[in-house]
Length: 196
Image (cartoon, rainbow, N blue to C red):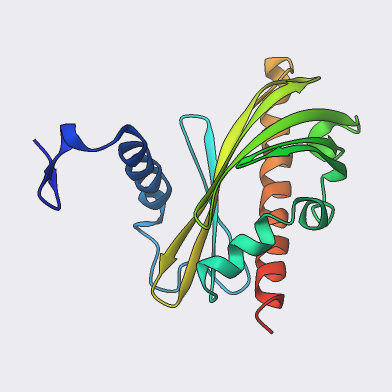
């Protein structure tokens, strides 16, 4: 039986247990990384476990500052190398629906439209999932902001399955990973530029 702060594991809320699991999944690939987290030339740590990709960066700013950049959906998304268009369709409390158009080497030159639903958990997590999209079987994940000594760990966890023949999937993931790393570098720069 696991006991955390005097509470038996069975008494922990489902969402809290899920959050602990996500934090563990994000941090487990980072355990072997030294205290500098990543090199200055490559600030992104990328891992894939059971088909789920996690890209993480450290930023020397408070969690709220990183959050403020992430939730500027239209402004921030259009700076990403693969997002060519974005439109917020609705906002109801913590739920946002948006339409995104992707075009990148991993889309093999095609413009891919996707209807995405985002759930905001203020200052700490954005969960998202595909509602509808052509050439995408599955797309879901989250952004998690974890306060750490000296700043914030920003982790993007993504589970994507393209509608492609198996022979093309290795090429897809190679291009997808390169795009994801470039996007995380841009996100890091945007978050840090808000600090100056």
